[in-house]
Image 1: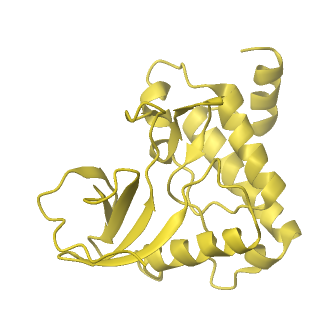
Image 2 (image 1 turned 45 degrees about the vertical axis):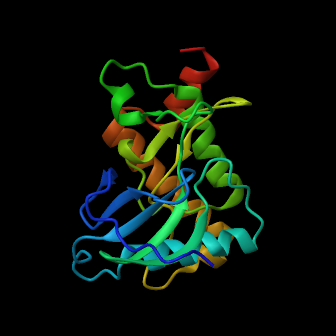
Image 3 (image 1 turned 180 degrees about the horizontal axis):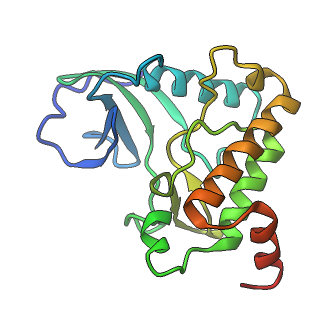
Length: 199
């Protein structure tokens, strides 16, 4: 069980979204704490409890977490209930580059993006939100990889894709195709050809 964290206010923010802020864990540099800072979007439930449940579901299914951040439980903070996750860092402890940063000059690693998509299809990991800010490229002892640090989970009211691998793959393909076309300007087939050609 995680210890009580008495104070987050004033600590360094690792990231901020529309609904949550991410803070460095005061007692463990390998982890971060996410807290709600705004109401969920209309018609949606709070994001953190859903993400936590889904990540635990993946653990029960023995899905490898090499490309995702593991959930470690809740803590009470001066900013409300916090949810503890792994921090995604380079092997030397520095912060990895994000896809958003690498898109600026077109140098984003196409092979790693394609690999992340294929891993999610292989294991039926449904993305709630694939965005350039949520994909990081840390350097590890095995080399550079792509990690989806946020937006993992099925938030459908009737979560068929959580329990059916066929529905999961349909949803994953649809979410990724939208992301690739809207954000990176390629289809999945075009991306696969670029990687095969060494682009």
